[in-house]
Length: 452
Image (cartoon, rainbow, N blue to C red; front, side, top):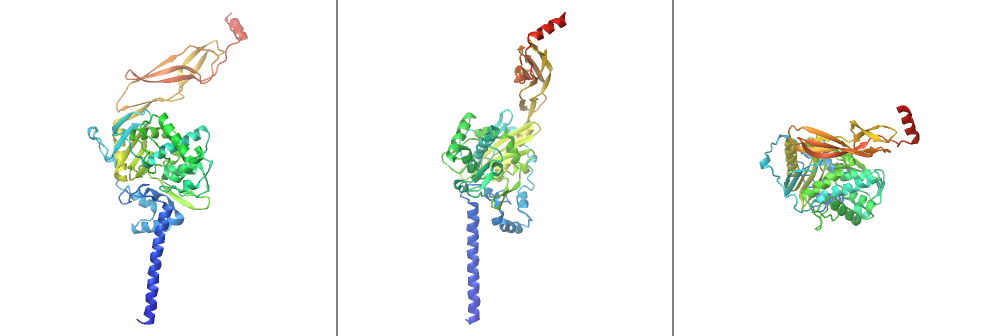
């Protein structure tokens, strides 16, 4: 071999070796940044509804070229188009369901009315099993509860500890020691199921992750979730963690009462700005918010043990339903089965709001010994009725108490009884819409003079 040929051969060998090293290094870098453990997060392929829930969090400084390369291979111009491709021709509205044949192709399922808690379908709904990231429903519930109590605001600064950033699985790639606003962390949990954000919030609220889990189990007991035990705040695999479709629906109902959830649950894509200037793009793990009319929130979950899980809500008119599917074989199947339950619920049932809170009645209440003779009253509660579709006759009866002055605004003065087709379905308190002082001696004298 001539000297020049030897030089060329050496150069080619060096180039091949360098290419191999760079390829292996890139793969290791990619895996490290994702911190994906086996069975810790969603896995699916975009051509088949299967993608990787962990890969929803894209650190642009690391993955921009990877995303562009993948898009180019599929002749797509953006990562969002890759995601949109998942739901081409996925028209869940067209599916017709017969009541007698209603089953879910999963380990368990349940359909519940949000307002009344009435269950209209259940399949193996009290079987205990792992629920993966649906555990975060309780994590979020306690966070929103802290906000309602005034112990936390969306602008509270939360420092990400090393234990939080080491969580792995689905994450927001928080920087250790960096400070983030609570609202930002909540958003990463609701949208992208971020484990690191869960732990950061849990440690801030309770002092430690373990103490936060104690609070989670206490809340579960208070809600009547008799077949649930939380082992962590993330849903990462643990032999001591389990729940049921029924209990998941109960805690979902509790979480949905907090409007802060809906600040983020409809988000499809957003960018998390890290204090150091890094940007992480996060995508919603609940694809039904784009694929099903009225769907505006939910929480996905996947581990090898739990398989594909989803607790999701949808609202049409006054009817809001909660659907839970656990143990589906694929993410496509999980979404389709939830859509099937929604289709059945909306087609066959409806919620009617019979009483609106704060409604002022025409009836007035006479006040004894008050500076004012009558007061107006208003309803102090809401009343919803959930039933099979059909015309119903609504009637109300107002029952007033005998009221003596003084009267404070908001004081209970009676109740409204509501009936459907002559059958009582509920009662709503009635309260005074104003304050009335008690008559004094001079008031009685003036009354006597006017009567003469």
